Image 1 (cartoon, rainbow, N blue to C red):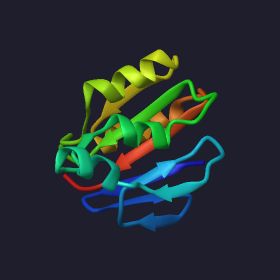
Image 2: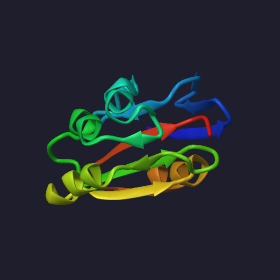
Image 3: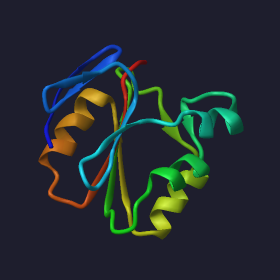
Length: 118
């Protein structure tokens, strides 16, 4: 699994370009992010709820790499961060262009969440 590039509104993974936020599962499967789980609770998809993290987290994951958007606007709620910490899953949250490098270089059992807009 290789993330090749990002630009405002898109991300390219293994030669395919996506124009929406993506989740990369432990298996390498790519899925569209379910923003509704956070929007329902906070009225915005720029703050990730515990419910959304519970839907993303997979048993055995030791790392969650979050691309926070081109300008770093995506954040995790304290409850979401605590949920990961209690499961021994380390969080790396960086602007998407930096998170791509972190994801590609990591040898951990990792999940990726990449926000492709602001």
